Image (cartoon, rainbow, N blue to C red; front, top):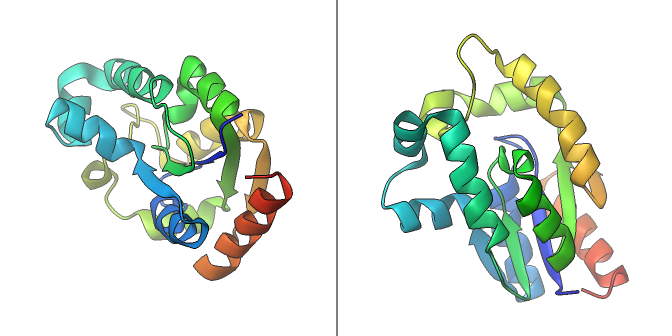
Length: 169
């Protein structure tokens, strides 16, 4: 098993922020899968969603994620990564998948404008609907669930650091 740490969770849960700090602490590379997608397609996420539709974007995301082959890396995934079954199975095979769990109210406070963030939300679907749809999938694919409510970035990073050391990462 490669010793990667893969962060999953809702948009706004802090995957990228926590990922960067954690990578520095571990001496790992940091990979933001959304940025990998943007670099590969030379477009921002919202443009890809507009162009290919939600299903098309999720296929792009799955293809990029299932081909991320790396070692000693912290990977921050897009919030919709859990719709890619092959990608999630790949992540499970190359590292520890950690779900950054936050209550809906905190996600709602942090998010702001969904369109600016490139969030895949269906027409007529609310953020609450999306949260309720995704939460069981995050739990299904996670090797570890971190409850992030009321914790600082430093506290969350420390918790993951301890877990990664105990698992030989």
